[in-house]
Image (cartoon, rainbow, N blue to C red; front, side, top):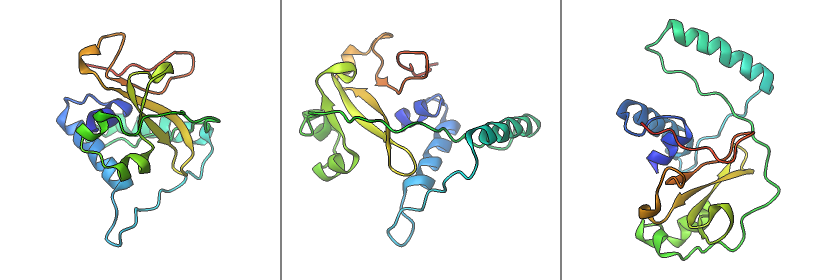
Length: 168
């Protein structure tokens, strides 16, 4: 899953330092603190245009201080008005990966047999408040990975069909 998270963050999965930063970001965001509750996610208190201005300022600072880790921009995505139906939550691939029925149910995972996610494990993506904002998919059969059929199908960018992971 770390290679997926690194690709979603625009990081080369083979860059161990960058992969560690992604893992630490995930830990900060999702790992429970000592009392068994996940830390609260802070909501942005700025508008998207203010966020862009702040990001531009931070990028300028990052160029002046290359040793410091850059802050990630807050990306705002509109909630989806649909969910994928008829996902196979008992697909053998999920069990082979060691996922329990509780984990599969909690994250809403399942094998998709039709549409753009056909042949992939559908991975629902949620924003900080829990709204469904997209799906990613992991190809089940590694022997079918090609340049036109990547291992991960990531959410689309405006004006493109699907975002392809950047590979070295």
